[in-house]
Image (cartoon, rainbow, N blue to C red; front, side, top):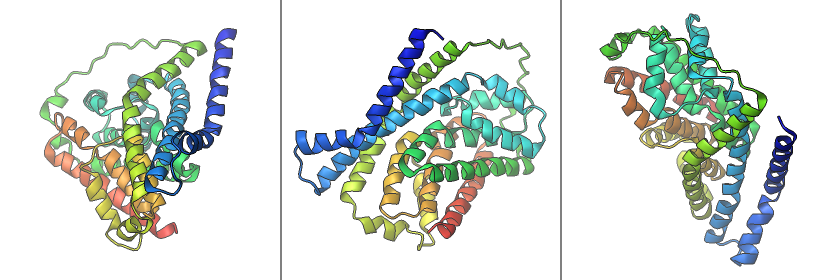
Length: 339
């Protein structure tokens, strides 16, 4: 990497650090000096929350997506498929769940990935482990959770997400549900064309990191702004004890209610984590909040509709049921063990 490139990178890092450290000062200056809003008012605190959290989340996202973009330059969907070929069932499920974290994925790529895995002879259950983990456990979820709740909650979310993805895929494979995959999927002949593995130097991988930032932030910034705006409204206007009474751990139905509400919604981690942050702040128990988040991200309704092109409704229904049961268990367990 050239000296100019290194200097530019260091200057950008310094700008990031200075900006992040002074976010609260910036938010207070806007509220108290420029807008001259009265402290303690509902609208004032909502706006303060929005002005502080929006740049905070965006700065965290830029840094982590840049780092993960460099890591992802070492991976590709083809390499992922090859890594999973021939692995024993449970080992394959676990590896697929872990690879889902670092492999580029979105709902629109669900069908090509599914077909590619089937062509490579990877079991259906292993494929589902990947499809569950990839949208649910990614760098966006990690950075948002770590930034808003701390690394303890982020690691809890990632570990439970891996458990759900691994065991859900394992159960789906044991149920032998291949007959509910669209018939034409198995008729596709494997494409044996060799894939060129291009060697990248470090400067090219740095460029890949910047490209990841540009591409991903461009796609999800609106979700972040909308999610934080909703969170700001909840933060400023909903009484602290209201959500705690409805979705607190003392109510046996809180986890079930959170999942029922979450499944029909459509959002990604960028949009839902700020809302979950405010729910916890308002007294919603951690297990219930995590269950809500997992149901929104892991059981995305648009993704289910897309997968209908390659799966029959029986398999989609069983898939939703198995994952939902896993999320319910996670919610209740964490409500019991975390005070």
